[in-house]
Image (tube, rainbow, N blue to C red):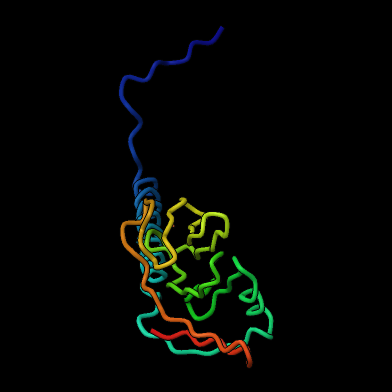
Length: 151
Ligand code: FES
């Protein structure tokens, strides 16, 4: 039977092992910085000023003809409420940049990632988001189908 010697001190770290560990650590730090930068960039892309016109006789804008229907265009989510009002707010969740949806049953804008909710005017109802959404004006010419979003 062979006896295995019991080590009395931890194994020494070689220079190669040390450099390998440092390289891995720096890579992790660089990836973390990139990830937070990407999130910050997505949040900063919410438009401050928009002025565009689409036509609801074309897909995907035709969703707006129906109560509860909505579309996302140029960073803005445009919806028709159950009461028949046309509303528009920025489409990017202020928490981590997820694109919002319109929930017809609850008459609100909603983030599917962490469940933040906003009223039809963009007012924060539930976090974790901590701020309101920018609101835009919508005008619809039901004769031509033109939908103008401005703000
Ligand atoms: S990204 Fe919207 S609540 Fe987190």
